[in-house]
Image (cartoon, rainbow, N blue to C red; front, top):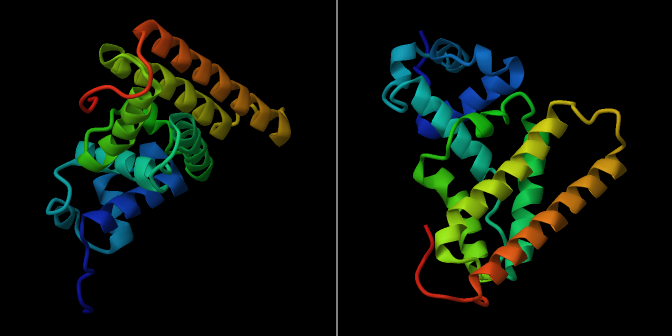
Length: 194
């Protein structure tokens, strides 16, 4: 008998994502992940507490598989993040809807949301409106990305979808600017959002 596979949390999560990519979210079970790793299901519980923890970890992977937004103006950071999310949805069409079903709960997953909070703060959105503004713009971006990845827009050309996504981002940028005008504050402010 060979050596047992060496696994850690990152390997378990990556394998879970691969199972879901290959067979869909319904096929993602602890037993399926264990089988792919050639370990017993019990071996996984050292690294993930249960299936919910596995799903939270996959949300983390989806939100962290791209680099953090570049340093620069808030609009550039949000555009880069939106583009990265769309690319992630295209890479993981069977799994990406999970982001509409589960909140970001792990510290690494919450960093993506926090980066949006910081960009909104820099845009001048009032501190008491940042959370709602993030929720609205994230839902719009995720909704477009999931719809595209699921094939809802398959009758449209790539050029049209790129134009639609750019228009969505422009609309969201206008919304953010209107939120900053409501706040009556310019860029800057005190403290960290969140």
